[in-house]
Length: 342
Image 1: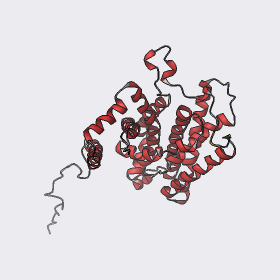
Image 2 (image 1 turned 60 degrees about the horizontal axis):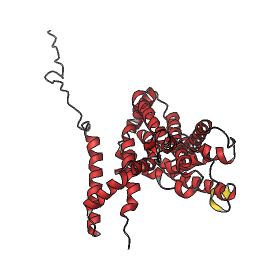
Image 3 (image 1 turned 45 degrees about the horizontal axis):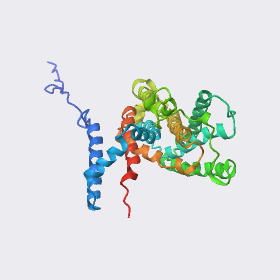
Image 4 (image 1 turned 180 degrees about the vertical axis):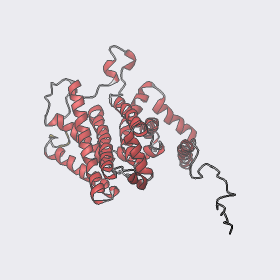
């Protein structure tokens, strides 16, 4: 009796490797961002034309008012600095699919933490600036980190929706700071604290005009350097470190990350705290580099919400965020130049 040998079922098939259809080409994210900006400019031009203005003349005026001279470009950088740090805060959370809508509140709490060092006062006014600045930066980051830790912990422990919790914490942050301004640190009943001593101010380029005359009148301050350093460090963390790989893997495929043994709950808390710390650093740079007093109105100017837009336009890339933030800083600075009147 002969024994028949069964033929493998896969005989006759061949293996063919093809690129994934859902994987866009490398140039696609940049093209989407550029296309979105171009569409916004075209739409804005149409609205200006409908209002009876000249779009080309208006955009030329915006360019001159933002980049036309070294002085106005310096002012553009000042407007861009808090946006850089707020956008970095949003980008690291969004990378892990954590929808931190509370950068505004974390920004305000960072300003509060830095201000507390001056107004309490924890350090005497005669303290050297090079001791004041690091302490205020750490205090601002700590306050922002606490404000990010709260929704991160609630998400990790009780699965509380972070969109709702971070939005609610924005209002709590404003109410908290208002209490201290009106009830404790008010100056003569006004809605602001006393002005900080100059030893607590972030150095400006104009401070070195006696040595380099071209810097005279330039308002760009040390906060820009803080933002650039934060962007470079965050880029290396996200794209060149093991922790960054865990963050990206959790964002792309949480189930695969869980099977790989990655602690999702711990990373949720850490990433939200880091996000809050970056936003808090932005609040510190604004209150010590521009406002020089604790005041709610200029702090609650929407930097945290602008950071959300900038982060997405930059495709969550920390280095690209710097460039997009400068563009938004230019639009904010020049927007007042084309406001309708009459």
